[in-house]
Image (cartoon, rainbow, N blue to C red; front, side):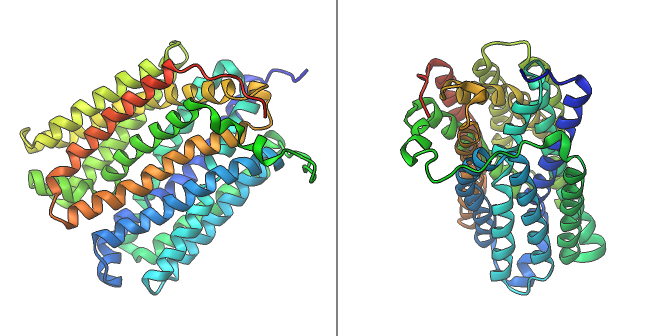
Length: 409
């Protein structure tokens, strides 16, 4: 029998996986704050800027399903370190870019690196952390992602003031290399290397048998919707809020920062909520309805300008509160969809596919909202964000009603 991990061992694993997750999020929010510098230097507009983020998340989304299969076959630790190494390479590619095509190369490398994190992170947390502490583990995992976003924005902001966008790329690469070093030093805690599967291993049909479970597709759709909404806020909140409320660019960045801080606070509280409730779909739905209400009020343009930051904080709190319950709900989806539950050798591929919806949403969101801005539809961005959040609520409540059959893998 596998011994129950101690609190100290659990905390160490949670912290190490959190460091890796934060590193991936540094690269999510590295480019958007640099757009004011990159756009005139390379001569492109909002649509091309949105396309860069689309390439990043499209490659990440497509790669996630494949990464989940690799995690199941060779172990999460190996795959996680390979992904972070690709992120480091993308930072260097950004630093030496001389045209738009090289920017595309940089984001493509980053997308490949980013693809491994959800299947690898969640596989490690489920294998190495006690079940009673998973709610808090998922809370810290989400919080570390928010801290990574803040770090990415900080690196970009500092670069704009001191070293330019090339310095931002090098700084991000250094962060990734430090993360790789930390994971290598802590290898005994995270080691889950698996024996290689020979040619007579899992058949292709059985590998993807879980796709016949409807709740898997509902989970995929939920992530697509909620992150498409976030993609619009992350990439274009500053120009949208500036246009509607007449606030400065600095105030727009402060509003986005408020959103991220609110989300971080929500994640902390959401971890305690997640370990105390059973109907996680209802907890997620309630939190997202609150976020949609705040987004609708902000979209109306009626509140005074001083209320923009508090309203963005409110949206962030709602999204953050939903995070840990969302991840426990997806865990239930994963375990109920596979014979053997948590012990199933296919755990990583389910996580890889479901969370690829996150990247698809983040790929489509910036592209759609960027095109809307270029077409003069600034006032449609925030109502679109609210609508996507409402649709996500409908989807997650549907997940709670569907009882997936156990599938053999």
